[in-house]
Length: 354
Image (tube, rainbow, N blue to C red; front, side, top):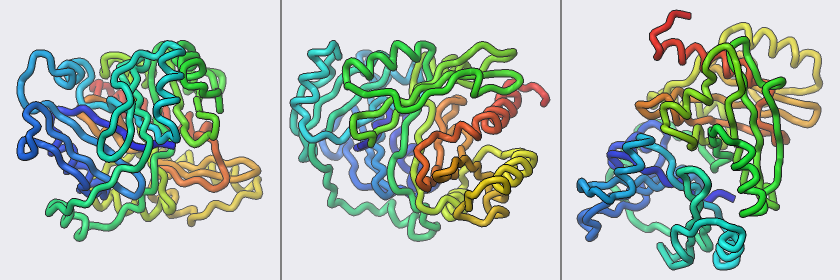
């Protein structure tokens, strides 16, 4: 399963405070000048079992990897970390299968970790053991004055790339992941754009990594736009699981989080589809509509999901909030509505009327 995500950013303090104030995270660790770190500053924040490590370069170094990463990608996810039972064995097998080593197995924060490079500008860390934090920080008082967000864990992390199959084969060969779910442009398209997507997962199916690539369309797709603004392949969004999406979205809105707005016609169609099924969604329909929450379902279960607007200056990284009920899909039934909303946002920041 997921252990944590590491962000490389220009200002780690401000990004940490953003997640604390807007998403209800708690500051659990800090490493900076006061602790002998002369070139980097790191804040670690947590909400439920969601752990984000936020790192910045604090002096202008020509050879600083973070600074070079920022010059291309801006604030972005640099590392996706997985919990593993045997760090040495998984690292050894990955290297034997052609992975490039970033860091050999070593002890850090009470855990054994190792890091490998993927085919894109993102790394994977293998974490054996549990991080423990025992510090108390005054910044956490902000969360005593705002509603809790009920975030549980990382559900999935999505990559946008122009070479999906190459990356899919890398996960299959190097980490022994397998295809969990796939769709193409005949299933995911609007009048203007389309995409292909494959979800890769580990043997136990506790890690889900959707990989998207653009497909030809009348306009530049939101996947291609991401690649253009990000400066190549990278992490497009992070899905966080909630046990009560209505309460979570209500709290996030009170904290200032901005979400995509869904057209009313989507809910007219959804109501009609639900009326023809045996599915009973777990929340009042009018509340789902009020909070612009999307619903996808089949005969076995359903999910509810909602997407924030980009959380960085570039129109790249965003957050998804998701609630699942016996449904392991990724909202394929909602992709058309989601894409149409993103296309509206694209036109806004391109200065084009809709």
